[in-house]
Image (cartoon, rainbow, N blue to C red):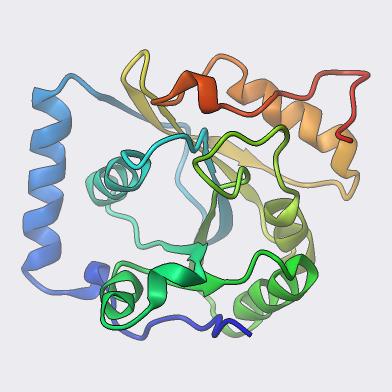
Length: 208
């Protein structure tokens, strides 16, 4: 079973280094022509959608975005990334190992994290992998519902060079209906590898 616990000390808690990385992130985004968008503050307790997830570039871009916006995040990642000694570094970045083959188990454990942490910004890529998948996985939604926290619409649009957080969404408990509304926000957002983007659910269509 994956050890779904939070690292006590992460890169976001590292004095001096986190300040230098924030300056470097802002400089990089500015010189490369990226625009940051924040439609309101990110909640202290929230599940952040990280989409589209189509490339290895998504992780460094996410970190640049987070540092530039002065956030502290944790993210769910494959267990294989936590093999020693590299796993220590991934945990320091805020990584939490999960076994996605046990979907219900990892959702329950993620919900439990919110019950014991007053401040937790948990990033979840709904596609689960940068490889081509047909539909989003529902784990992010069930974590938010179980923990009774809002969903933050995080995005990186490589086509327009715009990245940020498109506000929050309060889940109603009706996954199919809410998914249509959530994915409507992502309909015009392009990942690094467009061909790897999963399908967007529209009214009248359901995942199979």
